[in-house]
Structures are given as structure tokens and as C-alpha cells.
Amino acid sequence: MACDTGEEQVKPKLQLESSFFPECWKDDTRMGVLLAEFRPRTVNPVSYDSKMKFWKDLISSYCQSTGSSVVSIVTLKECFRRKGTVPYCLPVVFEDMISKGEIVRKDLLYEQQKNASVSWGPWALETLIKAPLKWSYEKARQTVTGSTHVIETTHFILKNTAKYHGEIIEKVVVSQELCNRIISYDKLVRIIKQSSNISEDGIQAALVVLEQNKRLVRETVLKEGSLSELIKFAVSNAVAQPITDIERSIYDVEQSETVLMNGIVKIEQDIDDTMVQVRACIKDGRKHLAKTYLKKKHLLEKKLERKINVLENLQVLLSKIHDTQSDKNVVEAYKLGTNALKQAFADAGITLDSVDDVLLDMKDVLGQHDEMLKTLGTAAIDDMDDLDLEQELSDLIDIKLAESNIDGANLIPAMPINSTQQPGLPGGTAEDFDKEIEKRLAALRVNTTEVHNGVDGKIRINI
Image: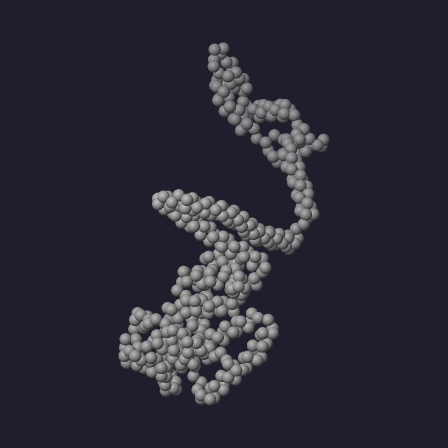
């Protein structure tokens, strides 16, 4: 049974520039050692590991420089040929990279991804029948040839470079706002080539890696007798979801819009070309032919008007569809916010009844507080008469003056009629009167120790 071993004949890459190679590439002695086959590692482990690292780094730089993660020994030998000598050590380098999982056969990687996306029947056929047969074929070939070396024409994918290219592709998709939208493979390739140096081989390998990591989904559809591959990328930190019927319908409408726009451009160009022919006929005096071209021009203009109307209706429809998707996201956001608010109320134990109770309690407490303030601000009740107090104070002052042998008559002499003094002042003004009152009050001493309550409950003061 014939079996695909991943052997492919391809044209070698273009010759690399001298600036691509490291500085030691100019050293004949050093390169003579690096281009030669590997000696056993037990002889000199340090030199062996250094040489292995040199070729692995050079292969990785080659893939990033060419924009393709797909490599083969025969291609690299031609690209790394130096003064007619090719690197004979590359098969050992590839064997080491295979054993460490740094590279994988291109056909195996593609088949693994293809089997992961098919139903149980084809998967069982591939896994239980085809895969064992391929393994048996490889073992038989190695037994007959007595060699376990890698076939030089077999294509391998450098995983790290494919992963790096996948990151670049995702950044381009995000910048073009193509996440969660269907895009054709051909359009994606055009966009990636315009934005980076990744070749189509590199794009295919990167897409396979992204699909394995659930970053995109792919689907092949038959349209107008030809197969077309559709791709949908997931948003950041999410898993790609299968393409839905609604998304396919939106994609079809968008494709119809593109076809209409291209048709409108073509009709406008035909109108311009027709007018050129009309002017040429008029210039040559062929009026009847010019009239025919004018009729064609009017027909094209009517056709253009119809297509423009259809395009406008289609664009309105697409706008409403996209608005619906946006409205759906807004409703989902409202729903999430409402649920979060309900959960916050539930965690805090807040209900409408509890809020009413708290407000009623607060209203009662504030009312009590207002009443307290009014009560504290009420003036004290005084049962004493101010006139009685003044009379008693005057009597006390007179008694004290009598004990001090103060002559009241001398203190208050008669005041001349034309004097400016206040009546009742001892030869002075109102200011002197105030001083005299102060002296009298100072002479009055009340012994607080002699204040006591009388038998009848009245306050007694002993002078």
C-alpha cells in the first residue's frame, strides 16, 4: 500500500545574504569543524553541545528571516552551502530536534489536526488502520535500509517559529477587528502578507498550531462549484467557538455586498469607456453610431442605479444585523450587572422592608433629638421679682455705708443749676458716678458661709 512519508520536492530558497550569517562564518578553520559530521558526544561533550546549539540557532534565524517555519535538510544544505561545502551534520541536528519535540513532520502535524476535527468514524479509520500501517512501513524501510536517518526531503515544522508566527497573525487579526468574524483563507493570506514577512507556508503552519490551541476554527464550504475555507478567530483569552448558521448568513451577505461593489465599479468604468466612444464617433461624424453608444450609456446608468439601490438596502440590512449583535452584548451586560447587584444586596442582607424600617427608626430618633434640643433651650423659671432684689440690694448698701461712717449727704451735694454734672453725682460726671458705684459694691462683702435657709424656707444672708 502506498504511504505518504512526507517527502516533497520543493525549490530551494534563495541564497541568503552574507549579513545573515554569524561572524564565525568567515573563519575557515572554525567553519570546517562546524560543517563536518558530529563526532561522538563522549569525546568532547562541550564541543558537541556548542556545535548543536550553533546549528539550532542558525535554523531558527533562517525560519524567522524567510518567514516560514517549514524546513528540510535538502533545503538547508543548499542555503547553508559555504564555498562549495554543505553542512554534513544536519541529519544529526534534525534527529536531536525530533527527539526533543522541537520539530514535527509537516504531514503528521496536518493529519493530526485534520483527524481532531472529523467525526468518530474517520478518526477510527485513521487511528486504528492507517496509522499502524504507516508505522509498520517506516519500521520495514528502516530494517531493509539499515538506517534510521531522517529523509532529507522530508519537510518539518519548527514549533517555536510556528508559534511565533501565530502570535503575529493574532495581532494582525485583532488590529483589523476580525475576531469572532468569518474571514476567508485567501483574504487572510493577503492581509498577513501585507502586514508581515510570513510566507504562505508559514501561515499554513501557524494556522495549524493556532487551531490545535483552540484559538481558531476552520470550515470548508462548497460555493459556486469551488471549495472555500472559512476561518474564525477567538477573542483574547477565549476558546474559539464553532461557526454558527447566523455567522454564515452574515458572511454570505457581506460577500454579496463585495460582489455588488465590484459590479458597481465595473459599470462605472463601462460608462466612462462608452462616453469615450461617443465622443470619438461625434468627432468622426458617425452620429448614428454615437446614438447607439448613448443608448448603451443610458442602459448602463439604469443598471447602475438599480445596483446602487440594492447595495444601499444590503448595507442597511448589515448595519441592523451588526446593531443587533451589539444590542445583544449590551443586554448581556445589563443582565450581568443586575445579577451582580442582586447578589450584593443578598450578601449585605438589604431588602425593601429593612430599608423602610431603618428610615422609620431614623425619623423617630431625629424627632426625639429635636425635642431634646427644644427642651434644653427653654429658659429657667425664676420666681423672684427683680424690684425686690434691687430694693434689698439698696438696703444692704445703705447699711454697709452706715457702718463705715460714710456721710450720704456729703457724697451727694447739691448741684448748681448751670452745672453739666449728672444729678446725684458727687461733684463729677457720669464716669465719676460709675466709679462711686464700683466703690460701694467693693465695700459690700457677702460672707457665703453665713448664707443659710430660714425656718420658713427663705434664704437668709448674714452681713
